[in-house]
Structures are given as structure tokens and as C-alpha cells.
Amino acid sequence: ENVFFVKKDTIAPEIQSNGEQGGDNNWLSEQRAYNYNVDFKDSLSYLSYAQYKVTSSTGLNGASIIDWTNIETGISSPAYVTDWAVNFQQVQEWATNYVSVRLADIAGNITTFYDLFHIRKDTTSPSISNGETGQSVLWRNSSKPGGYNITFMDYSSKLSNVQYRAYASTGGANPVTG
Image (cartoon, rainbow, N blue to C red; front, side, top):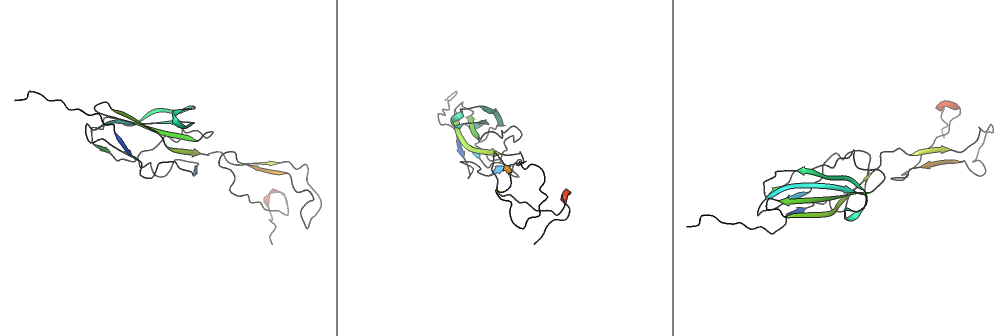
């Protein structure tokens, strides 16, 4: 009769991206209201841990924005299906944040999924620069010749639209209508 037996696992863990692959092309000003639906599986020796890393360039190149961070450890299950979040406070505004995932099974097989998705963050409000000098005392019934020297800027997500309103007096009272 056999006294012991050896199990062999040379198959790496797998990932199911569930539509998250490629990235979130929407600019985010705060943490998403829902977590990332990315599942992991290893039906032979079972999952050990799952981690993510965020970099400023593809292929784990560029600046390391968030180093390898545990999604879950000690999984000991053939699947991990709990949705998980990326630390939004650490994600950088100055870069497209590429999220890679690393999985390990109990046998020690490790798989890295490069650039599974990306995150774009913009938490800085647009700016307005008033280049007009002084106040014009002239009443106008059409635009000022040469236009007005006002600049609207947003370096990250860009401007969606600009709205302005004319007032008959200073301080925002008596808006002009019609």
C-alpha cells in the first residue's frame, strides 16, 4: 500500500477580467462607487494570494505609483470572486495609472497580468485666468473688438464646456437676461 503520494501542479493561476480589461476611460474625481470585478481561479492547488501594482507606464515600467499590494492572502480556495478596490488616494493625477495583477497558487506558480486596466484621476478643478486689464466703462450692444482675454484651462481631463453670465453690476448681482 502507498505510504504517501505527490501532487504536481505546473499550471499557473487564471484571471477573469469580467469587462474591466483595458481600463476606465472616464476621468474619476473620487473612488468609484463600485469595486473592480476581476476574479481569479486555480482549481488544482488552489489560490494562495492576489496582488495589484500601479505604474505610470505599461509593462510595469515607469514610476511605481503603488507597489505590490495585497488584494487577498491565504485564499486556499479554487476561486476568488470578491470585487476589490484600488487605493484611489494613492493613484496619481499626473499619470495614466496602469494596474497589473499578480496571482500565486499554493504550489508556488506565479502569474502576472500586465496592464489589466488603467485608471485616470482628475481631482483638480479647472482654472480661469482673467487677462483683462481694468474695467470697461463703455456700454456695449455687441462683443468687444478683439474679444475678451479670459482663459479657461484643465490640464488633466480637459474642459467639457464653459458657461458664463453677464451681470449689470459687480458682485454677481442682477444677472443680464434675454
